[in-house]
Image (cartoon, rainbow, N blue to C red; front, top):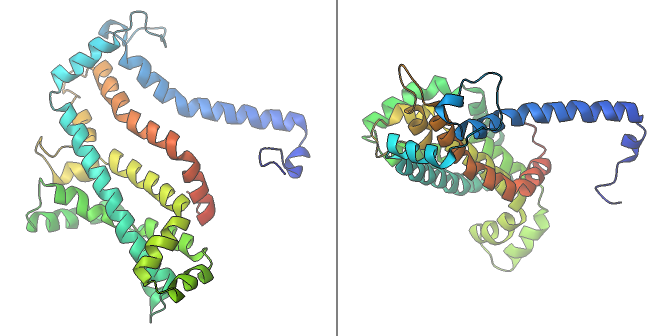
Length: 286
């Protein structure tokens, strides 16, 4: 059966009900995309049209390029913030891929006393609000001498309890016989993980990478606490600096926000298939 054909249970739903479902979904989708459309519209408006009533979605006199130049005049380090965000995002993602893959493989394949208890304790980290550990983490960073460094921005973010759970579930769904065949051929555990397990877990790894990249790119509170120098500020901090005490250039702020959103949109468009497959494969509901 073609996966795109309606399933039998769905066909049994009367068409008025289906029409109502489609209408509700369309309204929900429109409600979610409206902030993005408003951001793109405001990014191309001159100051005279920002507070215009009735609301004009399409600018009468679009000044996208002019707003872009004014943004860089107002925030000369904007490119630097972009590069810093990219470095932090890549560092955290690669670090979590390495650390969490090794840890998840250990929990999935190697029995040891107290394995389930240790794994439950790791998952317990998901129950602790980030705000509860922010101050102790700041004190630790300061005592290590990492304040205002990329070590502080990257290294604490190289472990994730959610990633541990996601990858362990993916590894456990791979038939053990495949790995045993590789072991009989002389492969050690690291080679089995690298050449057998990880290639068979690409959807889960891609889903995990998408989630990690999004979280690292959009992170605001933690970089705000552990950095205060322009050389280590990330894009979210840079955008917040565009807000003035008495006046905020909303068109420039929206232009900066639009530019900061483009990498996430491109990544999700390219990897959305793997993201959906990975979440479905691991039985995770977020």
